Each structure stands twice: as C-alpha cells, then as structure tokens.
Length: 624
Image (tube, rainbow, N blue to C red; front, side, top):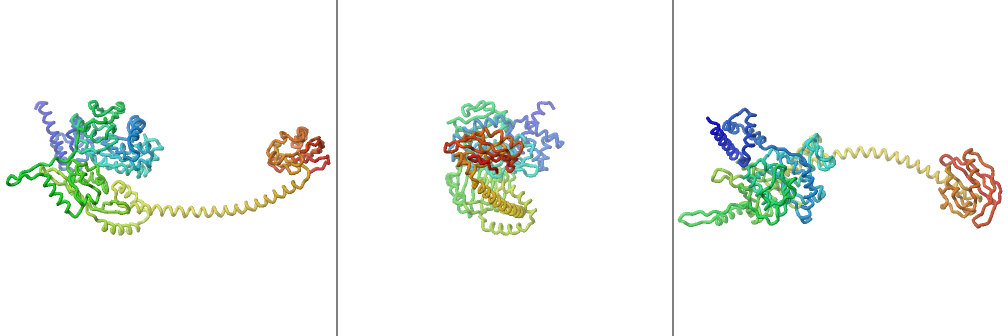
C-alpha cells in the first residue's frame, strides 16, 4: 500500500474515532488542530500498546476508565497562580482601574475564566479583584465563572487545595491572606471562594456566559483550527459588554478583528471590545416549525407550545427545560412563582439564571445527565429564602430527540422541606453523640464538600460544636492560670499599698520637717540640680519651688552669688564631708543687701549622693 492512501486511511480512522468520542461521551474534538490532536491520541495509544485507531476504539468501548486517561492526555492542564506575572501585573495596574471606574459602584462585576483547568486562574482573578476593591466590596460585587471541559480538573478546582510548591510565585503576605494551611496543602479562603462558580463548559459548542466585564482565556485558542477559533472569538465577542476586556495567552492574537476589538496591550495580549461593534453570534432558541395535520390543516408551533405550557403549568411541581445549546425553552407556572422567574427568561442562556447554580450546581448535572444519558436525582437540595429554608428533590432528565441524541433536558423540583427538616433534626441528634475526634475529622472533610456543593448545614453545626468544646477547654485552662496570677497580683498589690502608705507618711514627715525649718534649705543631686527647695528658700530668695526644681543650681539667677560656693560644694561632693560655713554678701527677695551664711553637707539619700545647702541670713553659723 502506498504512503498517500495509507495517510488518507489514517485520517479517516482518526475522524471516525473523534465522532465516536463525540457520540459516546459528548466531547467534540473536531475543532482541534489535527496535528496536535493526533499526536496526543497516538501517545495514549502507545502507552497502552495499541497501534491502530480501530483497535483503540475497541479498547474505549470495553474499558470505561480509558476515556478519563485519554481526556487527560488530550486536555493538557498547565496553569499556576498568576502565571506570566508581567501580564497579570499589567492587567492589575493598567486595566483593572479603568474597568472598575467604568461601572456604577453598586454594579456587579462579571468575570469568566474560560479553560480554567484546576482553578488557579480563577482564584488569581479573585485575589486581584479583592486587592483592588477591598475584600468586603469584592465579596458583594465580584462574580467569577470558571469553566473547563475536563471534569477531573474541575473537581480539583472546586476543592481549592494546592501544595505549597504551587504557591511559590505568590507573595507570602498574599498567601497568608488568601490561603489557609490544611495539613501539607493550602486551601483558598472560604468566603471569597463562594464568589467563584465552577462548571463544565465547551467553548466550541456551549452558549457563552453573557454580560461580562472581563473574559480570560489564556493559551486555549492555540489548540483549535482557524474555523473553530473564529467561532470561539464570535462567542467571546457576544459574551462581553461594550468596552469589556479580553485577556488571551502569549501564543494568541486577534489580528483580524480590528473592527470588533481594540488593542490595549499587544505585548500582554489584552484587548477591549469596541463600542458599538456588531454582535455576530446570537444564541436564541430554535425557531418554531410548522407541520401539516390530517386533511391539510396547518397547525403552528405556537399552538403546540400553548398546549404544552398548559400541560406543564398543570404539573404539581416546579419544572423547566433546557435545550442542547443551554438555552431555556420552557418554564412552568410553579417554577415562575417558586424561583422568581418570568416568561422573559425563556430564550435566555440557562447559566445566566440564578436557578442554574442555586440551590445546587445544575449546569454540571445537566452535562453529566446528557453525556451519560441517564436521569440524575438530587435529594434535599437546600435553598434559603430570607430567614426560611426550603428543601427540594431535583430530577434532571435528558430527553432524546429524533436523531437518538439528547435534545432537551427536563428539570423538575419537588418541595420536601417538611420531610427534610424532620430528617435533619434526627440526624443532628445522632451525630452529636459521636466522639469529639471523629466529629472534627468528619466535619472538616464534609465542610470542604459543603462549600463546593452547597449541602448539609448539619456539618457546619458539628464543626462549630467541636470548636466551642476545644475553646472551652482552653478557656478553662486559661482561667486557672488567670486565677493563680490574680492571687499573686492581689498579694503584690497589698504589699505595694502598704509601701505606698509608708512612703506617703515619710514624704509628709520630710515635707513637714523642711517646712518647719525657718532657714533656707536646698537639696542638690549628684549633678548639682535642685531636688528640694523649701519654703524658707522661697521666702529668702523670691523663687518658688516649681521654678527651680530640676534646674542646675549654679545657673539660677537670684540674690546669692552661687559661683562663690562652687568650690565648697565640689569639695563636699568629692570628700563626702561637711564643709565649714561660708559668709557671702547677698541680696534677698526684697532687694536688701544681707550677709548670708551657707553650710554645705553631704547627702547620700538620692541615687548616688548629693549635697544639702543650709542658708541663713545674718551669719548665725548653725549647721544641719
């Protein structure tokens, strides 16, 4: 067989395999570049020792686990927190302020991370907006959608758990602020995690998330051929609001879309949808078709829809239907009343409605039911309305069309609030009897699942109870320590009170003595600063105690020529002996000349020693 026919045969076998993957599991890889796609499939075939596409298809049909291994080989998940730091820095410093300034302060900020892999990109966006807006405002305004076709990667993204090496590029202060250590791993903080919604989405087939302010799709377009890239960019253009920003990867550019996108930074691959640019991709439900009835009478789809709506409204519970493109095609009366929907929501993308992710993440369930072609049931889904809690059993049922493929998904809600509440009370009593260690371990694991799937408020109560028990034990220990410390403090306080009373008595005694002495008494410390200046000194020299206290004695300006005493004082300080009386001519406070007798004595009672000066008018020569 010649080489060319063999290559043609191989290409046909590859296309047959891709068609089988699309029909069997709903993964449509027909838009991917054949060179890279064929290389990855061949790699997986080599890993299991198979050479022919037909043989590998037999392997897929007989081994369901092989699908996961193949998809993991095809869908290369390469990502990290703030990957390509320069691009993220430019986005944060140059683009984010303009994006925020262009919105009303109370307006919601909608962001989509398309091809988010294991979630690092979506969490990077959450950190970036929290830093720009402040955490409190980010928790109320920012909503981030993270989507991917790889369910295994999405499970990792929903868990939000990463090893320390994955966060090495993140500054330590940001890591400590937005991640909590959980054993050997770090988990993204729970309050901000609630603003990130993960779900399965195929950017080549599914309707895009709309009314976006920022769309991030980095290094995903390069895996698709030109036709698929064009369709994806059309969807992105439709999804963005006017002047919304598009952030692509280093290997991607929009060279042929200058009429729809302005270049913000070609180096960092950041673009902005042009104001007034025409929308080329519209996502509306299929137009109704007409059919011919018996006798040639024409019945319109409008009539059929009216009858269908009447039947649906007569159903006992809330119900709605979503077509294969993810567009809402039916909403019955109970659903409109129960969930606040209107007839205007028919024709909108299901992912834009709150019911798509609350009370449970329905989009991934719809994808799973469609791909596995079986009905899925969710029991006891919790929904909070004001102060009240409601519980629903949800049935997700794919309906097969004429071509043998699921064409619409029917979703019904059965209100089981009363039954669920009774079961919840019984379960709470039973679980409260478990051991403390089992409660903590079980609660930590169940809370991680609860934060992702919005389930089981009971587990939160168990965690709170265990934490309170632990805190109570710590408080009891602390209380004993405080009681012991308090007794010691009371003893010390009593001793200090007694000493304070003694000091007060001593101080009062000394002040009384100094006051009763008619002569002028001045006490100097070792630096010859005034430490005491009695009433006799104030009356003799005319200076109050508050004017001279802690001032250098030999710099004071009063009627006594102090420089004549310097040698006497210095000798007294040096020898620590009482000096002889010194007669000095001075001027008293009245301006009258007097003869003053000064006696200098050592004083050892103030931090290393000082002197006491006794000054008397008339030269009496009395000593201290």
